[in-house]
Amino acid sequence: MAMAAFEELDYGMTPLGELILRRREVLSLDRAEVFEVKLAGVLLMSSIVNQAEIALAELALPLVAGDACDVLVGGLGLGYTAKAALEVDNVASVTVVEYLQRVITWHRGGLVPLGPLLTQDTRCQLIHGDFFAAVGSPARHDDDGSTPCSDAISEISSTRFHAILLDIDHSPQLLLHAGHGEFYTSEGLERLTSHIHPGGVFALWSADPPEESLTDALSGAFANVRVRDVAFYNPLLDLQEVNYIVIAQLAPGCH
Image (cartoon, rainbow, N blue to C red; front, top):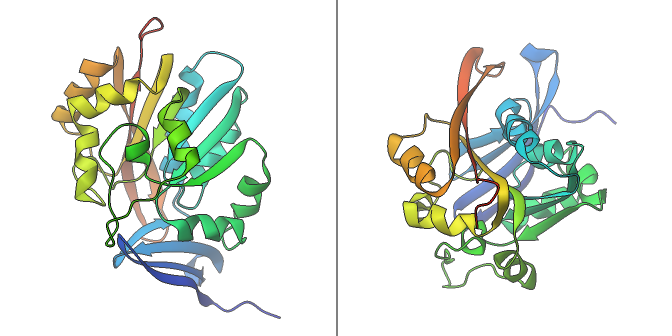
């Protein structure tokens, strides 16, 4: 039976607003199948525009020495950063923390293309929880006053990783939730370093160029900070776009 040209695969209200997963065929792209996520009325991500999410892992992880690296990813989305991390030769484990349970359910239920790959890879663990609380920033609270918490999140709070990759907010100045702001301060980034092994890397994706206040705060906590532009063609909008990967590395003997 032929698949519909447009399907709404999942819909639900979340603490961050209305969440929709949809699949559609784009006639102008030879009926290419595209999966899209909308949050609070805004298109959050698309399976056909994923170059920067992949670059987040590909640019950061080769900087990490060792042959058994543990990676923490903040934000699951459609899974492209996690998949790219698993494809790096020296990566032993990838732990993904996702605030919205529905997103994890999409992957475990096979609703999104990379779901089976991630859930069947024994090196990959998907955890429902608050990434920012796990790395020492104040926890967000749902409308009922609760916050996602689990034994796994508590374990992350006392664990060090060789690399931490973050793709949650649109940018450090355009947040999905006001409570995330504390993380991007000098104090928040200093707390983050206690979760990274000496010589390890923190990298974040941003839709906008990072402000000087962020790079200054990172420079105060890390030994080496750089910003990489990721230029790509967006076929859905028929235009060239640029995203940004900010990479910060600890000195080998730090902490």
